[in-house]
Image (tube, rainbow over all chains, first blue to last red; front, side, top):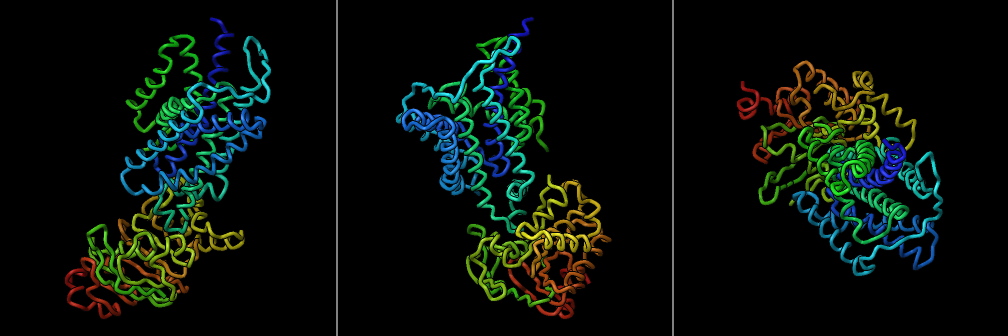
Length: 287
Length: 234
C-alpha cells in the first residue's frame, strides 16, 4: 500500500469535498427554509467563476478584490432570483417553482456560453506555492480554498443559531404559518435566504478557480453532485450536508484512485441510491 | 377594538364566509362557536391577514387592517394562537418564546415578558431547554399561547385551544384564559367546545356554514333553542 498516494487522494478529496460542502450548504439552506429546489444554484456558482475571470483578466482587479466584488454582486442578485423566479410561483405546485428555476438555469448557462464561449478560462491565483508535506503535495491556493470554505460554513452556522435573523430564518423554515402569525416578515426572510445562498454559490465559484478552471459548463455537474450530497444528508439539513459533502469528496477521490477513474462519477449515484433505498429521509433527515 | 363588518371570504370560487359581522370591545372576552367547517378558523386567519377577504371591512382600534400583511397586523398589537399550534418543533421552548418577542429590542422588556409567560405557564419554565416538538399536547398548547403573549398583544385570537386536550388540562386553560382577560387582555376565542366557551365568554356568536346565525350575551345565547339542541345537547 502506497501511503503517499492515499495521502494525496485524501488531500484532493478534501479540496473537492470543501467545494461540495459550501455548494450543498446553500442548496440545503434554500430547501430547508423555503422548500424550494433551486435548479439554478449550479449556474450561480458558474457565474461566480466567470465573473471573477472577467473582473480579474479583463478589468484588472486582483484576486481578492475581484472575488469580494463578485460575491457581493451575486448575493444581491439572489434578491432578484427570489423576486423573479421563486416568489411569483410560491403557493402553487412545487413543480412550477422547479421549472422556473430550471428556466433561469438554462438562460444563465446559454447566456454565458454566448458571452464567454465554451473554452475553459484560467484565473490567476493570488499565490500558489507547492508545499511537500511528507509525500503529499499541497498547494497554498488549495489551503486558501479549504480555509475559506470552512470559515464560510462556520459563519453560516453561527448566523443561523446565534443571531436573531438566523433564528427567524430557522423558525420560518420549521413553520411558515407559525412564523407569519408571530409577525415575522417571511417575505424578507425568503429574500435574505436567497441572498445568502446566492452569495455562498458565488463563493464556491470564486474558490473553484483556485484549483480548476472557469467554464460556463461547470455548474451542471456540480448541481448533480450537490443534490447527491443534500439527498444523502437529508433535505434541508445544513449540518448534515457539511459532513456528507466532505465524506463524498474524500471517498470519491479514493474510489477514483483505487477502483475506477471511469466509474468515478457513478460512485456518487450509487451512494445516493443505496442511501435512498435504506433511509429515504437521508442519513441525518427526520421523519 | 376589533370590528368585523360584512366580511366575505372565498377559497378560489368557493365562498366560505358570508357577510360575517363581529364586534369585540376593549377588555371583552368574546367567543365564536360552531361546528367543524363553519368558517371559524377562516375568520381568524382573515383577521390576521393570512387570508384575503373578497368583501367587507376589518378594523382594529379604528384602523383598517384587511389589506395589511400579517407582520404589519401583529406589529399593531394582535396575537394569534392558531388551531394547529404551529410551533417551531426543532427549536427549544425558550427559542420559541424568544421568537414570539422578536420585535423586542430591549433586554429588560424581553426578560419582563418572559417572566410573565412563565408566570402563566410555570410548566414551560421547567421545559425551557426542551425541543418544542417533544412536548405533550397540553404543553404545546401552553407554549403556543405563551409565544403569542411574548408579543405583548392587546387582542388575542385563540383558535380551538381545547382541541385534543384532556378535560383537566382544558379546565386549567380556561382558568388561564379568564385570568389573562381579567388582567386586561381582550380575547376572541373560537371553540367547538361550546360548554367551555359559553362558560367563560361574556358575548357569543354562533356560526354555521359561513354565516353568523345567533349572537348576543352568553347567558341569552346559551338558552336559545338552536344552541341547546345543536351544541349543548340539552
